[in-house]
Image (cartoon, rainbow, N blue to C red; front, side):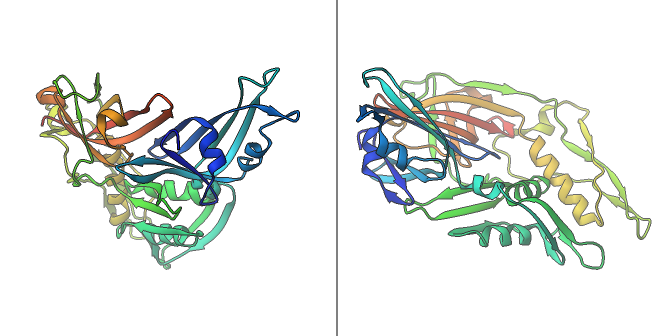
Length: 355
């Protein structure tokens, strides 16, 4: 494993692909399928370009990319090949094969399903979809406010499983993403961001022990910090109140409501709902999305950090001053691996400033 990575085909280590790959790029991004790009430097043999590699990385093949950290393998992505591109140079030298694919969420986005559900919550619907997939374990948080009662109305799916999961997640302030064990076992996560966990890595800037060269931070306080919305129950003609104060953990000392000025910016929300529980769920989801008014980007590498950073984790920034030091949520990571280094381009978010 020249790049300290391992490529598997259908969960079986493939020595040919592993030794011939020259560069790997894996992009994890919140609310998107994780994508991968593999480049193989190949020669022309018997008038054909890397026939065996072409077959083992054909569109539809399920590839996994594992990286090594602390003497353990970490599965960055697993999913089908979607695209293959060949570049042939006369004489063979300098020819290459480029392969692109997405994680197994891509397989959940192929078939539109029409299905009626009653007497269940959004979490129940998500659990049933994930649990019915082959070799995927469901990690689903409860949504007691988002329920469908048979006497009021049923939930009707008219979309792919992936689009439905992301739609249900968004209106509850949740996210849906997939992780994999080294043996290929998958877990589908349907829940909100975990803001109470310990940082998985420390990013240091402006100190002697720095491991990032720069940190770019953007703070946009032009965001709503409160919900103003009413809806009418068409059966009882009573008002449904959507007022809500968000109590999620702040990753700093001053939240959006604290720094946006004396007059809070509000959002008008009037979704079609049957009860106050559903209205509060929509309000909570909207505020959870709006509160992330600080974004940051930086880059590092495995040699400097001695750890692989994944999205949907917490990192701690040190050396960025009183306002921008502290905990951040990782919303995206681009892993770039070649013979020179294992680089990571990080995308971070924060719902408060101050350490």
